[in-house]
Length: 111
Image (cartoon, rainbow, N blue to C red):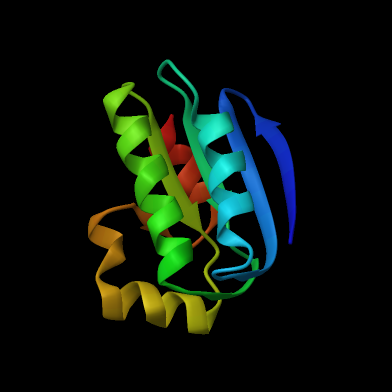
């Protein structure tokens, strides 16, 4: 799994590519928790390159969400592919992490 990273003003944008499953979620979670860090950081995860997410990937997002909220920050996801979007809908994970159609919408909500 590759995880791109860029800044959009005060927002860190992570761009994972591939499958978020049992094999790759530990790397994703470690990188995500590094980015979240202490303070009121804002993190946007661009899922346009993620083809599939398992429960392990969802757990990684949940851990980051908890850490972000505890530190006063915010996290959001955007650009979900159809299969990933369906998994988010079935699991009702949008109640845990805000989901947006586009990166622009997510960035606007985070600022």
